[in-house]
Length: 255
Image (tube, rainbow, N blue to C red; front, side, top):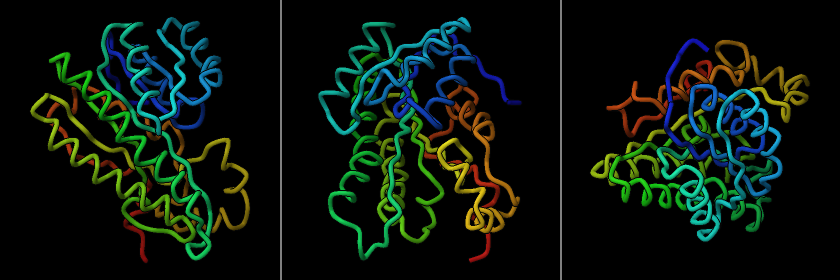
C-alpha cells in the first residue's frame, strides 16, 4: 500500500464486512486509525476480525445489520453512535449475485440481488446521511459498485443492473447531499481474486477470462487499498460524484 492517510478520530461503518472486500477494507481503514464498525447479518462472522484489529491496537465493533431492513439500519446507526458518538462515513459494500441466463432468472433471485446491492445502499446511505446531516459536520459515502455497472457480461443481468443503479444512486446522493457537506463516490472493482473465486480463476475458463484483461492479471485486494483510502480521506475533499474503476483496463478492452 503506497497511499497513506490518517483517519484518527473518525468512525467508519462498513457493511458486508464479514468476508471478502468488506473484511479487507475494515482492516485497512483500522490500520489507518479509523474506528471501524463491521456490519453483517451475522455479526459473529465479524468478531474474529474485530478481535484482530483490537489486538493490533485499533478500535472495532461488530454489528448485526440486514441492509434490506430499515429498522436494522437504524439500530446499526444507534449502535455506532452509542459506542463512539459520531459517524463520519459508511462504506456500502454488500454484493450478491447468481450466474443465471436471463431467460431463466426467477423473480425471487432478482429481488434478492436488487434488495441487497441497490436497496441496501439506499437504506444504509440514507440512514447514515441523516445522522451526518444532523451532526452538522458533513461526511462521506463510498459505494462499492463494479465495472459490471458500466459494461455487461452474460448470465449476470440482475447484478449488472443493480450495480448500474448503484452508480446512478451515488450521483443522486452527491447532488442532493452536497448542501449538507456530504460527499458520495463509487469504487468500481474489476475481477479481484479472493478465497471464494480462486478455484474458478485457476480453471481453464477462468484463465481465458484473465487473458481478456489488458494487464493479463487479476486484481488483488491490495490493489483497492489506495483508491479506497483516497476516496475515504481528505485527499479527495473536493471529489464527489466520481466513480473509480480498479480493473487493469478491463473496461477499455476490445468488445
